[in-house]
Image (cartoon, rainbow, N blue to C red; front, side):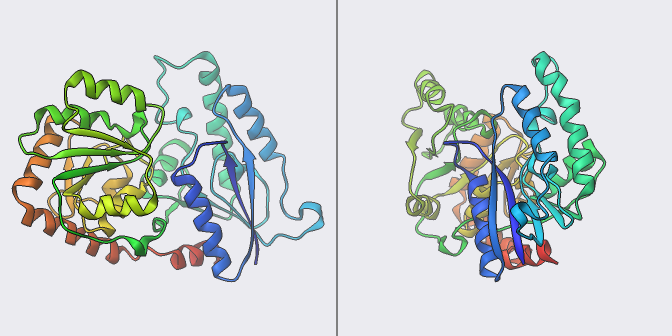
Length: 341
Protein backbone atom coordinates (compact mmCIF):
# COMPACT_ATOMS: atom_id res chain seq x y z
CA UNK A 1 0.00 0.00 0.00
CA UNK A 2 0.91 3.67 -0.37
CA UNK A 3 0.61 5.02 3.15
CA UNK A 4 0.86 8.49 4.62
CA UNK A 5 1.74 8.83 8.29
CA UNK A 6 0.63 12.10 9.85
CA UNK A 7 2.19 13.68 12.91
CA UNK A 8 3.27 17.06 14.23
CA UNK A 9 6.70 18.65 14.34
CA UNK A 10 7.89 20.64 17.34
CA UNK A 11 11.41 21.95 16.58
CA UNK A 12 14.25 20.85 18.86
CA UNK A 13 12.05 18.60 21.01
CA UNK A 14 13.16 15.00 20.66
CA UNK A 15 11.89 12.12 22.75
CA UNK A 16 9.72 9.04 22.67
CA UNK A 17 7.28 10.55 20.17
CA UNK A 18 9.99 10.99 17.55
CA UNK A 19 11.10 7.39 18.00
CA UNK A 20 7.52 6.18 17.81
CA UNK A 21 6.96 7.99 14.49
CA UNK A 22 10.22 6.73 13.00
CA UNK A 23 9.65 3.21 14.28
CA UNK A 24 6.20 3.10 12.69
CA UNK A 25 7.52 4.29 9.33
CA UNK A 26 10.41 1.80 9.42
CA UNK A 27 8.12 -1.12 10.32
CA UNK A 28 5.66 -0.31 7.54
CA UNK A 29 8.48 -0.06 4.99
CA UNK A 30 9.98 -3.34 6.21
CA UNK A 31 6.59 -4.94 5.55
CA UNK A 32 6.75 -3.77 1.93
CA UNK A 33 4.60 -0.63 2.05
CA UNK A 34 5.51 2.70 0.43
CA UNK A 35 5.47 5.24 3.26
CA UNK A 36 5.84 8.99 3.55
CA UNK A 37 5.41 11.08 6.67
CA UNK A 38 3.48 14.35 6.73
CA UNK A 39 4.64 16.54 9.63
CA UNK A 40 2.61 19.61 10.60
CA UNK A 41 4.41 22.39 12.53
CA UNK A 42 2.94 22.71 15.99
CA UNK A 43 3.42 24.79 19.11
CA UNK A 44 1.52 24.61 22.36
CA UNK A 45 1.03 28.34 22.79
CA UNK A 46 -0.48 30.76 22.12
CA UNK A 47 -3.75 28.87 22.11
CA UNK A 48 -4.88 30.69 18.95
CA UNK A 49 -2.15 28.82 17.06
CA UNK A 50 -3.54 25.49 18.24
CA UNK A 51 -6.95 26.47 16.92
CA UNK A 52 -5.43 27.49 13.57
CA UNK A 53 -3.65 24.14 13.17
CA UNK A 54 -6.89 22.29 13.96
CA UNK A 55 -8.66 24.28 11.25
CA UNK A 56 -5.86 23.60 8.76
CA UNK A 57 -5.88 19.86 9.44
CA UNK A 58 -9.64 19.49 9.17
CA UNK A 59 -9.56 21.35 5.85
CA UNK A 60 -6.88 19.09 4.35
CA UNK A 61 -7.88 16.17 2.10
CA UNK A 62 -5.19 13.50 1.67
CA UNK A 63 -7.01 11.11 -0.67
CA UNK A 64 -4.96 12.23 -3.68
CA UNK A 65 -2.56 15.10 -2.82
CA UNK A 66 -1.16 16.58 -6.04
CA UNK A 67 -2.92 13.81 -7.94
CA UNK A 68 -0.96 11.06 -6.17
CA UNK A 69 -3.26 8.32 -4.91
CA UNK A 70 -2.92 7.32 -1.25
CA UNK A 71 -4.28 3.98 -0.06
CA UNK A 72 -4.31 4.72 3.65
CA UNK A 73 -3.61 7.49 6.15
CA UNK A 74 -2.39 6.57 9.63
CA UNK A 75 -2.52 9.49 12.05
CA UNK A 76 -0.43 9.45 15.20
CA UNK A 77 -0.78 12.87 16.79
CA UNK A 78 -3.28 15.66 17.48
CA UNK A 79 -4.55 17.44 15.48
CA UNK A 80 -3.45 15.57 12.34
CA UNK A 81 -6.22 13.00 12.72
CA UNK A 82 -8.50 15.79 11.55
CA UNK A 83 -7.14 15.39 8.02
CA UNK A 84 -9.53 13.65 5.66
CA UNK A 85 -9.09 10.32 3.90
CA UNK A 86 -11.50 7.54 2.99
CA UNK A 87 -9.22 4.90 4.59
CA UNK A 88 -8.15 6.75 7.72
CA UNK A 89 -6.76 4.95 10.78
CA UNK A 90 -5.85 6.74 14.00
CA UNK A 91 -3.19 5.39 16.37
CA UNK A 92 -3.40 7.89 19.21
CA UNK A 93 -0.21 8.59 21.15
CA UNK A 94 -2.13 10.98 23.37
CA UNK A 95 -4.53 13.86 23.00
CA UNK A 96 -3.83 17.54 23.70
CA UNK A 97 -3.45 16.88 27.42
CA UNK A 98 -3.71 20.54 28.45
CA UNK A 99 -7.35 20.42 27.34
CA UNK A 100 -8.07 17.15 29.12
CA UNK A 101 -6.68 15.57 32.29
CA UNK A 102 -4.02 18.27 32.84
CA UNK A 103 -6.54 21.10 32.67
CA UNK A 104 -6.82 22.95 35.98
CA UNK A 105 -9.54 25.62 36.08
CA UNK A 106 -7.86 27.24 39.07
CA UNK A 107 -4.73 28.10 37.07
CA UNK A 108 -5.85 28.03 33.43
CA UNK A 109 -6.00 31.31 31.55
CA UNK A 110 -8.99 32.52 29.61
CA UNK A 111 -7.52 31.45 26.25
CA UNK A 112 -7.01 27.84 27.37
CA UNK A 113 -10.46 27.78 28.98
CA UNK A 114 -11.97 28.91 25.68
CA UNK A 115 -9.87 26.47 23.65
CA UNK A 116 -10.67 23.41 25.75
CA UNK A 117 -14.22 22.75 24.44
CA UNK A 118 -13.01 23.40 20.89
CA UNK A 119 -10.32 20.72 21.23
CA UNK A 120 -12.71 18.20 22.75
CA UNK A 121 -15.33 18.82 20.06
CA UNK A 122 -12.65 18.56 17.35
CA UNK A 123 -11.40 15.22 18.67
CA UNK A 124 -14.88 13.78 19.08
CA UNK A 125 -15.91 14.87 15.59
CA UNK A 126 -12.78 13.95 13.64
CA UNK A 127 -11.86 10.71 15.42
CA UNK A 128 -15.42 9.47 14.97
CA UNK A 129 -14.84 9.72 11.20
CA UNK A 130 -11.80 7.44 11.20
CA UNK A 131 -12.15 3.90 9.90
CA UNK A 132 -10.42 2.37 12.91
CA UNK A 133 -9.02 3.74 16.16
CA UNK A 134 -6.10 2.45 18.17
CA UNK A 135 -4.45 3.92 21.26
CA UNK A 136 -0.85 3.80 22.41
CA UNK A 137 -1.97 2.16 25.64
CA UNK A 138 -5.03 1.21 27.65
CA UNK A 139 -4.60 4.46 29.60
CA UNK A 140 -4.86 6.57 26.43
CA UNK A 141 -7.89 4.53 25.33
CA UNK A 142 -9.56 5.08 28.71
CA UNK A 143 -9.11 8.86 28.44
CA UNK A 144 -10.65 8.86 24.96
CA UNK A 145 -13.65 6.91 26.24
CA UNK A 146 -14.05 9.13 29.31
CA UNK A 147 -13.83 12.51 27.59
CA UNK A 148 -15.06 11.80 24.05
CA UNK A 149 -17.22 8.70 24.37
CA UNK A 150 -15.16 6.92 21.69
CA UNK A 151 -13.63 3.46 21.79
CA UNK A 152 -10.06 2.64 20.78
CA UNK A 153 -8.11 -0.61 20.85
CA UNK A 154 -4.85 -0.50 22.84
CA UNK A 155 -1.93 -1.31 20.54
CA UNK A 156 1.47 -1.66 22.20
CA UNK A 157 4.76 -1.35 20.34
CA UNK A 158 8.33 -2.22 21.35
CA UNK A 159 10.90 0.38 22.34
CA UNK A 160 13.69 1.17 19.87
CA UNK A 161 16.45 -1.45 19.65
CA UNK A 162 14.49 -3.81 21.88
CA UNK A 163 16.84 -6.71 21.15
CA UNK A 164 19.91 -4.79 22.35
CA UNK A 165 19.05 -4.67 26.07
CA UNK A 166 20.87 -6.99 28.44
CA UNK A 167 21.45 -7.70 32.12
CA UNK A 168 24.84 -7.56 33.90
CA UNK A 169 26.32 -7.48 37.38
CA UNK A 170 24.21 -5.43 39.80
CA UNK A 171 25.69 -2.24 41.20
CA UNK A 172 24.14 -0.20 44.06
CA UNK A 173 22.20 2.43 42.14
CA UNK A 174 18.67 2.97 40.87
CA UNK A 175 18.47 4.23 37.30
CA UNK A 176 16.06 7.10 36.59
CA UNK A 177 16.07 7.81 32.82
CA UNK A 178 13.67 10.35 31.29
CA UNK A 179 13.33 13.97 30.26
CA UNK A 180 13.78 16.19 33.29
CA UNK A 181 10.26 17.60 33.39
CA UNK A 182 7.66 18.07 36.13
CA UNK A 183 5.32 15.37 34.87
CA UNK A 184 8.16 12.83 35.06
CA UNK A 185 8.53 13.60 38.81
CA UNK A 186 12.24 13.04 39.32
CA UNK A 187 11.77 15.26 42.38
CA UNK A 188 10.37 12.18 44.16
CA UNK A 189 13.78 10.52 43.84
CA UNK A 190 15.57 13.62 45.10
CA UNK A 191 13.34 13.81 48.16
CA UNK A 192 13.50 10.04 48.69
CA UNK A 193 17.30 10.21 48.92
CA UNK A 194 16.93 11.92 52.29
CA UNK A 195 15.11 8.85 53.65
CA UNK A 196 17.32 6.07 52.30
CA UNK A 197 18.89 3.68 54.79
CA UNK A 198 20.79 1.66 52.20
CA UNK A 199 23.89 2.89 50.31
CA UNK A 200 21.97 3.23 47.03
CA UNK A 201 22.39 6.20 44.68
CA UNK A 202 19.76 7.57 42.30
CA UNK A 203 21.26 8.14 38.83
CA UNK A 204 19.14 10.64 36.90
CA UNK A 205 19.78 10.55 33.14
CA UNK A 206 18.45 13.06 30.64
CA UNK A 207 17.99 16.77 30.14
CA UNK A 208 14.97 19.05 30.12
CA UNK A 209 13.25 22.11 31.47
CA UNK A 210 13.71 21.13 35.12
CA UNK A 211 17.46 20.47 34.99
CA UNK A 212 18.49 23.54 36.95
CA UNK A 213 15.55 23.25 39.34
CA UNK A 214 16.54 19.69 40.19
CA UNK A 215 20.19 20.68 40.55
CA UNK A 216 19.18 23.29 43.12
CA UNK A 217 16.90 20.82 44.91
CA UNK A 218 19.78 18.36 45.28
CA UNK A 219 22.00 21.06 46.68
CA UNK A 220 19.39 22.36 49.13
CA UNK A 221 18.57 18.85 50.34
CA UNK A 222 22.23 18.03 50.82
CA UNK A 223 21.94 14.76 48.87
CA UNK A 224 24.62 15.29 46.25
CA UNK A 225 26.21 11.99 47.29
CA UNK A 226 22.90 10.11 46.83
CA UNK A 227 21.53 11.71 43.64
CA UNK A 228 23.56 12.28 40.48
CA UNK A 229 22.52 14.19 37.37
CA UNK A 230 24.40 12.44 34.60
CA UNK A 231 22.85 14.44 31.74
CA UNK A 232 22.43 13.31 28.16
CA UNK A 233 23.71 9.83 27.38
CA UNK A 234 24.05 7.73 24.24
CA UNK A 235 21.84 4.73 23.54
CA UNK A 236 24.74 2.38 24.29
CA UNK A 237 25.40 4.13 27.59
CA UNK A 238 21.72 3.97 28.46
CA UNK A 239 21.66 0.22 27.94
CA UNK A 240 24.73 -0.17 30.13
CA UNK A 241 23.13 1.91 32.91
CA UNK A 242 20.07 -0.33 32.75
CA UNK A 243 22.19 -3.49 32.72
CA UNK A 244 24.01 -2.77 36.00
CA UNK A 245 21.14 -1.12 37.92
CA UNK A 246 19.64 -2.54 41.09
CA UNK A 247 16.30 -1.35 39.75
CA UNK A 248 14.64 1.41 37.75
CA UNK A 249 12.42 4.19 39.05
CA UNK A 250 9.80 5.51 36.63
CA UNK A 251 7.07 7.36 38.47
CA UNK A 252 5.58 9.97 36.11
CA UNK A 253 2.12 11.40 36.58
CA UNK A 254 -0.44 9.63 34.38
CA UNK A 255 2.01 8.60 31.67
CA UNK A 256 0.62 7.67 28.25
CA UNK A 257 2.84 4.62 27.64
CA UNK A 258 6.49 5.05 28.58
CA UNK A 259 9.44 3.28 26.97
CA UNK A 260 11.30 3.27 30.29
CA UNK A 261 9.09 0.51 31.71
CA UNK A 262 9.65 -1.77 28.72
CA UNK A 263 13.37 -1.03 28.49
CA UNK A 264 13.81 -1.95 32.16
CA UNK A 265 11.88 -5.18 31.67
CA UNK A 266 14.04 -6.08 28.66
CA UNK A 267 17.11 -5.52 30.88
CA UNK A 268 15.58 -7.80 33.55
CA UNK A 269 15.35 -4.99 36.10
CA UNK A 270 12.49 -4.43 38.56
CA UNK A 271 10.54 -1.23 37.95
CA UNK A 272 9.34 0.98 40.77
CA UNK A 273 6.36 3.04 39.65
CA UNK A 274 3.49 4.90 41.31
CA UNK A 275 -0.19 4.24 41.80
CA UNK A 276 -1.08 7.22 39.59
CA UNK A 277 1.56 6.70 36.89
CA UNK A 278 -0.84 5.50 34.19
CA UNK A 279 0.82 3.58 31.35
CA UNK A 280 3.48 1.72 33.42
CA UNK A 281 0.69 0.10 35.44
CA UNK A 282 -0.23 -1.97 32.38
CA UNK A 283 3.03 -3.88 32.88
CA UNK A 284 4.19 -3.47 36.48
CA UNK A 285 2.50 -5.69 39.07
CA UNK A 286 3.39 -4.97 42.68
CA UNK A 287 5.46 -7.80 44.09
CA UNK A 288 5.42 -9.67 40.77
CA UNK A 289 7.31 -7.63 38.16
CA UNK A 290 8.25 -4.62 40.27
CA UNK A 291 6.83 -2.33 42.91
CA UNK A 292 3.80 -0.04 42.77
CA UNK A 293 3.92 2.62 45.48
CA UNK A 294 2.13 5.82 46.48
CA UNK A 295 3.81 8.89 44.92
CA UNK A 296 5.57 9.73 48.18
CA UNK A 297 9.33 10.04 48.85
CA UNK A 298 9.20 7.83 51.96
CA UNK A 299 7.46 5.04 50.03
CA UNK A 300 10.08 5.25 47.27
CA UNK A 301 12.92 5.09 49.79
CA UNK A 302 11.36 2.03 51.42
CA UNK A 303 10.98 0.30 48.05
CA UNK A 304 14.62 0.98 47.12
CA UNK A 305 15.85 -0.19 50.51
CA UNK A 306 13.78 -3.33 50.03
CA UNK A 307 15.43 -4.11 46.68
CA UNK A 308 18.88 -3.57 48.17
CA UNK A 309 18.12 -5.65 51.26
CA UNK A 310 16.85 -8.64 49.28
CA UNK A 311 18.66 -8.71 45.96
CA UNK A 312 17.59 -12.28 45.27
CA UNK A 313 14.00 -11.05 45.30
CA UNK A 314 14.99 -8.06 43.16
CA UNK A 315 16.43 -10.41 40.52
CA UNK A 316 13.28 -12.50 40.66
CA UNK A 317 11.16 -9.42 39.95
CA UNK A 318 13.40 -8.50 37.04
CA UNK A 319 13.21 -12.01 35.57
CA UNK A 320 9.43 -11.97 35.89
CA UNK A 321 9.33 -8.60 34.14
CA UNK A 322 11.14 -9.98 31.10
CA UNK A 323 8.79 -12.97 31.01
CA UNK A 324 5.77 -10.63 31.22
CA UNK A 325 7.12 -8.58 28.32
CA UNK A 326 7.57 -11.70 26.20
CA UNK A 327 4.13 -13.00 27.13
CA UNK A 328 2.54 -9.72 26.01
CA UNK A 329 3.58 -10.46 22.42
CA UNK A 330 4.70 -6.87 21.73
CA UNK A 331 6.09 -6.60 18.19
CA UNK A 332 6.20 -4.30 15.20
CA UNK A 333 4.82 -7.12 13.08
CA UNK A 334 1.69 -7.13 15.22
CA UNK A 335 1.42 -3.35 14.93
CA UNK A 336 1.67 -3.42 11.14
CA UNK A 337 -0.91 -6.19 10.87
CA UNK A 338 -3.36 -4.22 13.00
CA UNK A 339 -2.86 -0.89 11.20
CA UNK A 340 -3.03 -2.37 7.70
CA UNK A 341 -5.82 -4.90 7.92
